[in-house]
Image (cartoon, rainbow, N blue to C red; front, top):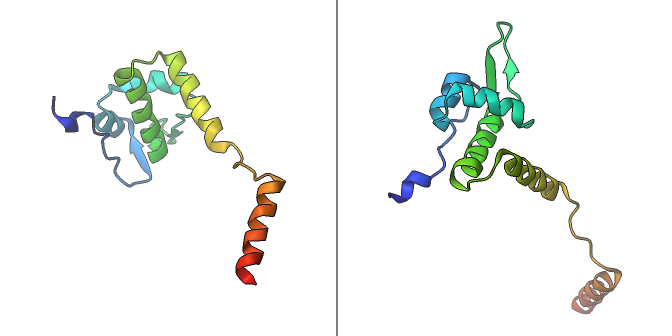
Length: 115
């Protein structure tokens, strides 16, 4: 097995992708993309006036993440949803706060450096 078989495909830098383009980039059939759209709330392509799906780059990247979780990591759909939910919460968590003693110590070190 070649090392580059597991490399994540490069998503072209453009605003919108038609479902056929997303299918080619991800290697997934269009019906899978439509199904995942119903299962994973983070995938929400815009619709043109004719009803055609237009995926954003962030949608395509999320689809690639989901594909990795389901196909390579062997997650269930439910497990992948939970993993993505947990990852989103962790990225939104407030940064760790310093305790009062840590702040006091740092301020004392700064004071010593200045004197």
